[in-house]
Length: 336
Image (cartoon, rainbow, N blue to C red; front, side):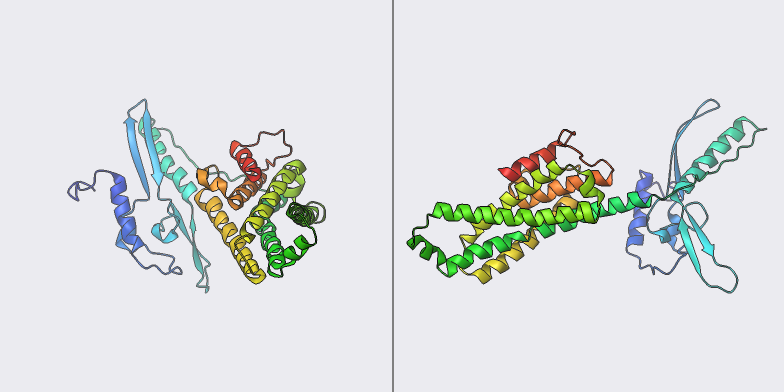
């Protein structure tokens, strides 16, 4: 084919991608099952063979098939796509992608031709045997629960920041701090009591989440993961969150502003952490080094590691288990 076109393609990929680019600019109705009349769909091969060596003793080749996820880009010839008709008066029809079966069939065609060439009296029949598949619903639910936890728990536990900020800024706005100082209050004691109260409040909320998840909802994520690892991460996040609230409250003078800034900052930063950790720098990739200086990113990364291991049925059941280096790194930065 390349010779007929004047030898303009140096690799098969160049030919295939040219027609795929043309299809990308072509409007296709999703309901249109068959797009075989399109010139670019006709041009895309169902399979491609690269022969390295072929003789009476050796057949060495590499095979590939059209595995594009858009089903209209496949010809409806039974190799990688198969049409299904309801029959009778029904007009219902659909198409099924069969990329795996098509790959096996494409390789089988070449294998059978090679064997037939060497052994005229031999006939080879090939097929795929689908073994019984029993869906483990409990395992599926455990994975779904773990994935939900990586989204819900960080967002829920970051909502303490505006509460901590509001309390401090409100006392500053009402000049309660000045009144207490006049009556002999030491600022050291004031900040110490505020820190202890906020931390106790945060730990009670965290305990409610853990008790409901482990004992009432019986979620595998809470049951299978080490309690001490949870405690280490949650305590670190609580300390970081309270310290951040104290720092941000210095720049605010009104409680209403503190509430708005607190909620906006918490939701925005946790949403950004979800985007960066879940999509851009998803494990096993590592975050850029400067992201570890932001407590929100670090806490979300810790939760992502915990949930990822549970989705693979390898929850961290103890602190003595092999904990990934990045998770140790993140726990360290929660306390720095």
